[in-house]
Image (tube, rainbow, N blue to C red; front, side, top):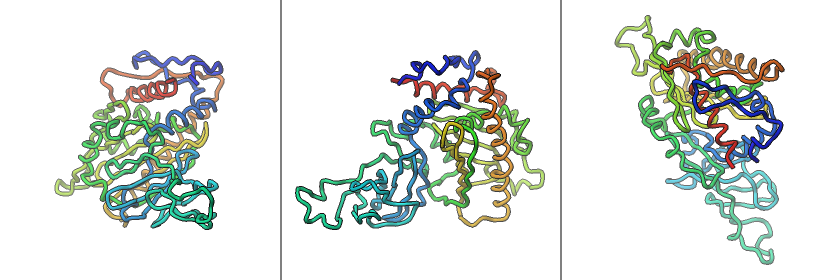
Length: 374
């Protein structure tokens, strides 16, 4: 259903021109009908991050991921390919695999129906005696899967454009910071349930208008006067020069002396912090309900062994920088229920400086374009 036809939703004031536009009305962050439409039209039809390719190095290695209420298996089928399937047995709908691991056959724990890594049913108790039945007629339902810069994505929409074609130019950006992201490994993962709509987290990431008032240490690392944000169709690029470390000499300066990050539609970011060469941090906001999301933080490095210095950096990102943002977005979510608020005006300037919210405007326009499409 076209959201404009739903009488309980007000007409929005998001215009094409960011200089004269308001934000999405508060109902887009608090209404069940909007949330349901987002799951169907956005998350079931977009490339969603599933995990890192390092988890799928050997034949039979698998990971599972939930796209809202749809469980998916991603498995290394052979030396040259990975495959993905809905994580459900074709017999009585039992879940096949949990978590991650290695399996040379996908066997249902309920009745032992066993599938090959290509998804084809191979055997099951009593099937040889079953009338008018052949194992060759049963196969797991496949899901589209792609690797991009060492990251694995799935898409439930069989007609979706390939991911690489949706993020033209992003690969070169990532490789300029991490030449071989596929060789990195997971060093740390943290999760946090946040009392805010998933879009609040993306809105917050897409602007640095709040940075000077909220992120004191971040602004000591990154020169806000040189910070810029460039939105593209399905991603945006954020970058700011880092301040030189006064405690290090020229020989100790690292290759990466700037902050950079990308927001990928719909709900993840890839980040590179000053002074951290050949490392990247992922942030994903998983929608749970209208006013709750699960925040996931993954840190990928050349080695899983964490040094004291690296631990300090991870602790700062997770326990300081992120906590500052969570405080903001949870406060905003509470404010969105106020009878005294409807929507807000975007702050945009010609320089597209750190004070400009043009990338949030782009995101809101994208939300509307997808939800209002027939």
